[in-house]
Image (cartoon, rainbow, N blue to C red; front, side):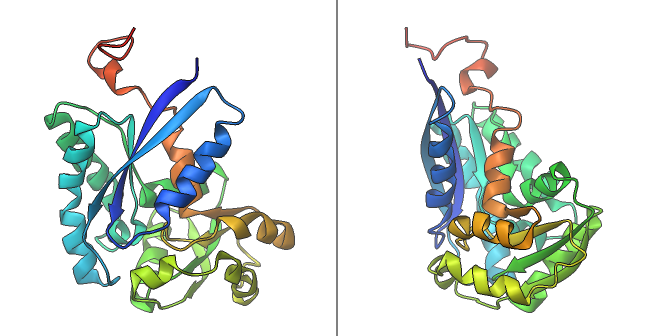
Length: 250
């Protein structure tokens, strides 16, 4: 019988991509593994990608962790890379610890993956020493993302900031537009290209095409988040309570 896995998603209110790209990848996994995924979201208010709105939204993330804990999800994914990275180097570790603590306090200890931390770990998993990135953010926020990545020991050789402040507009972009944008990115020294340093900017349909064209690994924040959710495989929530099966089920 397929294993049932509940995916919790902490999502900015204007994000329209995380709940499509991550399920698409995990549903594709169902074709090869005895697993079935369901998806459960809690939203936090943010419409403009500014430092002020990002900070206010991030402060609200702990409420989302409690709400998802009530659903006894197996793993939680925090879907806003720049909200984490704009709060200072290494903040993904603090955010993860805070969210896990709130879930535990609510009676459901749950592993948490932040898209910020996942991107770092995804680059490391690919052996990247240097990367080049494309991000939809304004220049100062994109620079903060580059500095954050470099603080984790991975050089950012070049980046493109698309400078789109409206988060809904970011999510409405054609992912295949990246096929042209990549031509302006100097990735000559990069080991791995980050095609979308944002889980809101659609990119999934362009990844394989661009990877084939440039001849080097391509990753996105959404791909990294999905990978991290499954590495190691999420522990069922009931295992934390000492059960071997879901209480009340045969």
